[in-house]
Image 1 (cartoon, rainbow, N blue to C red):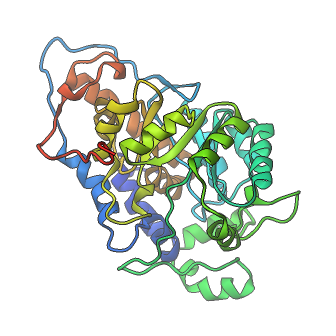
Image 2 (cartoon, one colour):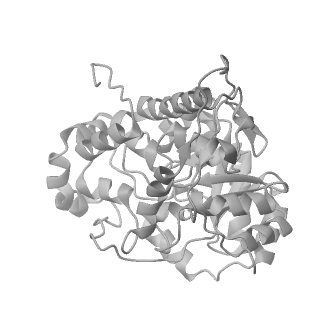
Length: 394
């Protein structure tokens, strides 16, 4: 399976390699989750509850996996979800952007990312910039305009974070910045993972724990925790604020983190062009169900008005097909590509996207479809009580 090329055949193998390669604190940050871990576990368990209803003859010899999301044509219904500061690989989000471009799909860049939006958009012209509601309106607009000037083609706004702290299995110890004291403190972890350490040494870099896309007026990038503190102190946005920011952007605009039908309808009223059904990877309010459970009701309610994508728990191409059959236009990948990045840099992310494409094609073949756009609920075995119709009567 491993050979000499570094290729891996499943996301599960990429995760195993990431666990072996990354320092304990870094790997724990990727596993993440919150409190008891109910949500993070349900994100993957829910997909396993869904079955397929395959055909055995009259199957399609050619199958089309292409689609469009937020005005961008992509070669498969999978694109990169924004994730925060990455100490996974020296090239970080730039490597991810290159991998996505090489496989014909879009990149989403977190405002808490470790690489500047200018570098990422240069590596992938199909870049969406993600923002949290942090700082003043003037700072929000400046941040947005910087992304636009860099070439970002869509804006993603995430407002589902509830500042939940604590995990029953313990949270990783992450320093404010990688200064000499932090390097000495974490030296045993780094020495225990020499390949990871060698990657950064060869690149003459140390893991960057700042957020360069949150710097203002060309000043120094704030640390992750400094920016997080400002975010916690910013007054929470209203639906009118969302509509205002959407007007300021004026282009493709996604609201990420929607789990309720009533919120999805309010998002439509605010003028968004897309919503992401997501529980923030299980890192947020624990006890929130898996997005795939909430997807059907949301897609039925607003799928004719906005693009609906799913983010959370996707580990294989079959999961993508299940999401599309339940009404998603595409899915966003988070942990899966981070594990690929840890396992093999840009090539590892490309490997993960190839796994997704292959799995989608295999499922389409078995289901007898020539296009992902032909998928529907009849292709699935959906157990009674699977869905979670949140906010449907509100």
